[in-house]
Image (tube, rainbow, N blue to C red; front, side, top):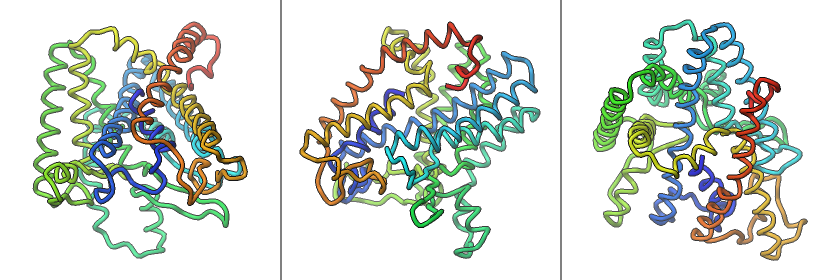
Length: 375
């Protein structure tokens, strides 16, 4: 949750974020590249743990029908919120010229599918999830006819795509749901491992994490399958390493999943072995993830608007319809990378007390207000 805010501050406020990709090796710097790359951990861990939480919730409730109803309702609710509060918080565009399907909606889609699979054994769900993760990159090799119905369906489910809905509205499938569903299904099946004693669980997590990272290195070194972008020798050893690590998130390639989820399993082991006060602080944000997600978007965007006014822009200069978060096109605006880090730390610090308050309020009133279960 904390690292995620860094990416959103960079995306909205960095001086070159509109015109420059942080992973474009011809224009990026190592600092900018890894500022983006470290945040790759966020989405796959969110989606994986969403599946794990669904498993734990089912075990705690012991009621299959109730769990199915909750996942279905929550899934539909998350998709609705994605296209309303989340999209508006991202673009501040009241006319919604861009409708973007991102991580909240893909988690909602995953919950809906998972609600239909609750009777399936965890082992079989794991196999389905692993098959999706390891094999979905093969589908890009199939030569679908452009403009065909099957190409459109494939693009919506498996690839990053943009579809014009009208002369003024574009639908962007940023998080193709099937590859992310594979991660959620594996997360759900992994819930059984969280029931094991800590020592045994950590040994298994350590092995899984190391095995995933080893597979990442092997597949990446072979450079044939697992990611649509091949690595290549660059102008220096540092940039060659950046090329090696430059995996594809949209959609999440096999190599993206191996490296991010491999690191995730090592984090699980680390988090249980190291008991420290800072982990209690971090847990304040983790206990109210959707509340934090919504509020931090609006806070960062408001700070961007304030920044633009300070940089001499006027309201009529702002462009909210083209997906630039309001930043004027063709004119330089924003802040350098060091300032991105300062704003990021400030945003996280400012949200500590609201998250602490909401966490306590939610705990005290969860049986009184049903809507608290969804935010």
